[in-house]
Structure formats: structure tokens, C-alpha cells
Image (cartoon, rainbow, N blue to C red; front, side, top):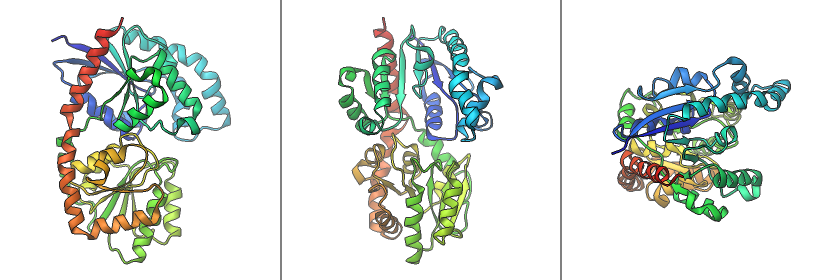
Length: 395
């Protein structure tokens, strides 16, 4: 067996599902088949305080723009703290200098590898076409692009045509959508599920006692209302409180919308019933001990948190958003699906999930079997096959 050297790339490490899924894949890959490197464009606080220790020790990590003058304003932009002058410098002036520096550094590193996996599809604008095969990962729904973001669709079409040997989609719906939108490159698009370490998730879920003495429901995600819609969740929970429900609501995560959501909870009169737990290094303990897991997103790709909740034997209630939840929850057989933004429907589903033991048992039984197909084995084998195919086919 030929051992392949694979270089992964990510722009930066924040506190989100993409970072978690990348680290899971790095851990899962067979070291008899692969030697692995990782490039990261910008340093972040989360990389050093959280993720550095989680990256496998044998993975060679390279930060491409560690200098403060190259990365400081990008970090401020990520935090939503970039003023007008900073925006002009970061988006207009600095890229002219930074891009060739980062490109040169990356190409020097990549010269020692057999293939590149661009995990957030950010490399092509820095490096253009490489001399070795390159895979890109697309993590979000593409069905809305023609009407809402045609510029991004044009960019994706160009990337598929000129830069990537394969573009990975995370579920079958995303794969069908992108093949319909870019039929001329249909053969380049493949579906690979995220890699989920079931045993590790379950062990971490059992790593501590229940965080709250009172029974509670939990929702986990970045507090960013452009995508996640905790607003509808809070309104649905307020309905249940009026009906006399006793469980608290715990929201695990941080983000730009936290203050807005805390204010809404106060306005709805449920501030004393909602716990904003912030970012947790081990969210699985919170998920393990909850009565159920609620997910209210507007759009997704393959949301890891639903897979993680299923791995923990947790009942899942999710919006039927584009595009991952329906596939993950097997069309509603492994969890309950509710239309996006349907506050009353979400409240009814939460109440049923808490109180209807027959429904709970049926959903949990199906989910326990369904989650096993999304473990390490199938995903890593498919990834290895895909990599080997593009390396052999690359001119």
C-alpha cells in the first residue's frame, strides 16, 4: 500500500461545527494509509486555547500568516469589531501584500504532499490551480444561490471548473442540488458525510454529572441569527412556559447575537427560565443530561450537533431547513421535523417530545440504529477511495 501525504487547509479556527468535523476527520484517517499536514491561514485565540490540543500530535501544523500585521485586522473582522478605516485596510489594501506572501508560503509547504484538501474552499483565490490534486469541501446549501447570491454561484462554478479535482458535498440533497446548478462539472461533485467519532462523543457525554439540578431542554450552536434562529426557539419556549411546562431551556454557544437574544428572553418574561451557558469545551455533558435537543436553524449543510445528539441517545427536534436535518433524521423517523420559523409548530413538537413516551421511544429506537452508518468507518473509507482516485487520475 502506498502511503499518501495529504495536506488539509482551513482559513482559521473559530468555535464551530466545521472545525469539529475537520478534527474528527484528522483523527479518523488511517495512519497506515496517510501522513497528514494542516495549514491555517490566520492564528486565532480559539486555535491556541481550544483546538491545538485536539489536533492529533502527528499532524504537522503550519500557520501561514502568524505575524500580527498580517492577521490582526482579520481577527477583528471575524469578531465584528472592524471599523471603517480597518475595513478599508483589511479588505482593500492589505490583500495586495498578504495574498502573495501567503500563497508563496503555502506552495512551499504543499510541494511535499500528494494532494490538498481545502476544507473551506478558501485556497483557490490565494493560490489558483495547483500542480497536485485539490479537493474542496462545500459545507452549506447551494439551492438558494441562483436567486439570493448569483455571484457566489458563478464563483463556485469557476472553482469547480478551474481549481478543484473534486468538490465534496456533505449530503445527498446538496449533491443533487449542485449537480443541477452546475451540470457541466457534475462528475467532479461527490458526497462524503462528516466523520463522527461516536465512541469519543459518548465518553465525553458521560464525563460529568448533570450541569443543572432541574430538568431542562438544550440547544447548541453559534449565536448568529442570520443562520441559527434562536429567536423562534425562544418564542416557542415562551408558549410552553405559559402552558405550565417545568423544564428550563439551556442554550449552549456564543456569538454576535447573544445580547439580542438575552434581551428577547427578558421581553418574553422567560429570562429566569433560560440559561445562556456560553461556549462549552464539552457540550456533550449538557446534551447527555437534557430531556431533549432542539435545533432551530434556517439553513445548514450537515449539522454535526444533530449527529452528536443522536450518538448520545438524545431525542432530536429540528427545523426542516435546507438541507441536512431531513437526511440526518431519516425523513422524521429518527427525530421530529418542523418547518423553519414555525413557532407554534416548534412548541407543539417540543411538548410532544417531552410528554409523549410512545413517540419518544419510537424515535429514539430508530435513531440508535440510524446513527451507526455515520461513524468513522464508512466516511473514512469513502474519503480514502476519493483521494486515491484523484491522485491516480491527476495529470
